[in-house]
Each structure stands twice: as structure tokens, then as C-alpha cells.
Length: 84
Image (cartoon, rainbow, N blue to C red; front, side):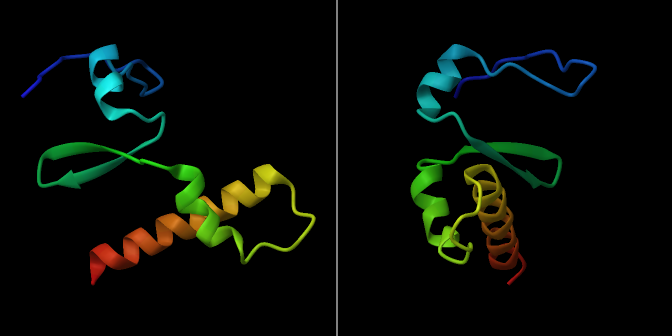
């Protein structure tokens, strides 16, 4: 198990150490809270994961808007699964 302490900035940001970033093999993570523990998990293929949700977006929608809508739907889906 690797344990690393990092400082939280005034803006609430932290830098994930390179050793951990290398192990995650992704540039997107999500956080889970379990009791008093924060768990950081990698999102393996954001583009592949979100493409499923993008089919509900109207043609001609800007890519940024499409991505935002897809993320919102993915988060709603994840939340529904956890509360079941």
C-alpha cells in the first residue's frame, strides 16, 4: 500500500503524485466517500463511457455541451446504481 500526504490549496486542489498518476493510467478520476474514507478511483475510458450517453444529444450540439450533458447523465446513472 502506498501512502502519500499532500497539501490542499486554498482552492481545494491537490496534486496527485506522479507515482500514483502512473498507476491510475488515466487523467480522470472520481471520488467515493465511505464512512470517513475518501476513495479515488480511475475512470478508465471516459470517451467510451460517455459515448453511450451521447446518443440522446441533438445533432449540431457543441462538443463541450455534449460532453457536459453526457457527464451529467453518467453521474445520475452512477448515483442511481449506488442508491439501489
